[in-house]
Image (cartoon, rainbow, N blue to C red; front, side):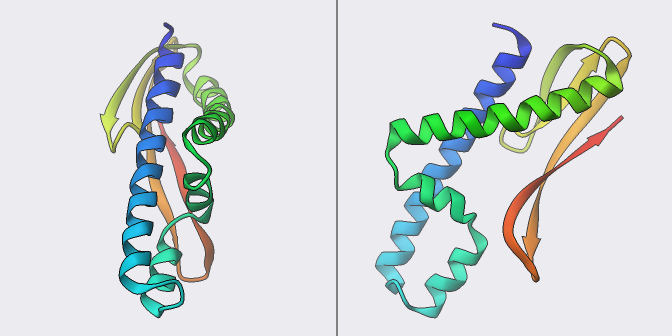
Length: 133
């Protein structure tokens, strides 16, 4: 299996684990506070609504949806990384639940850091990919 395929499969498994955790928390909060209580609505602002929707579709649908999401995101990221360092030779995870990586390419190294973005005046929590050379 190529480094890129390993990289994608790790991202898929990490995302699926995160969605399972979101679904578990969602069920706990709904049981504790009910649907219309302020605390539950406040909690939902912190969680990507896409992940909540995906979490309710079943395991097979979750895997298919996440695979499509990861493939699309990682193809774009791979192109950006290869623009900076040439063809990717090696990929090493540097932490953050399988989202931060160090890449070694034909022309050098670069690091990808994933941060969460969202909060006041931003509609939806999302990830931001920072490429450092």
